[in-house]
Length: 232
Image (cartoon, rainbow, N blue to C red; front, side):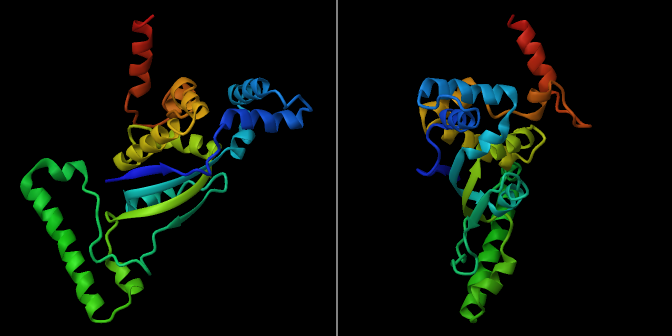
């Protein structure tokens, strides 16, 4: 079962923090929390996103596949850092793994998938019994194996990631991961709840641009526009 844990080191009041940091540079009154909050929103609305890098986010990503975590690493902007569960020191003989939805289409396909994973687990155990170091046996571990990662990132980096990875054409597990991160952040504090559910800080790139820049569009933005028009 995959899950996201927002660690206690995460910034509790991201909007107020952004407003205070900006206010210092503007020689404004930063003792008033209401003004800090409004100033932080103004920075977001104006696209002054350097201050969003001050908002620190600490996450535990647990139970997602090594494959999707490898894709997660491709987003390196904003100087994030991370540590991943070690295959050198952790005994992975009975590793858990992710089963894609398409594998469940019939029992035969699911059994074949499970058999493959079982064979890898058995092979791992045999090599371990033969005295092969775990760091070398790890070469046979599948990308579908679940793993655990601790991540430190920031709001600007996560906003940028959401533009690409909330897209319908993104890999399904990455979309799930992004939704899990966003949902858990919304529970962290009132300001996070406002950013996620009211301000809608995390959005697909087509929502921000007003059109889809992809050569093969999923049609989401057109359907969204049609729905908005019908609700007027």
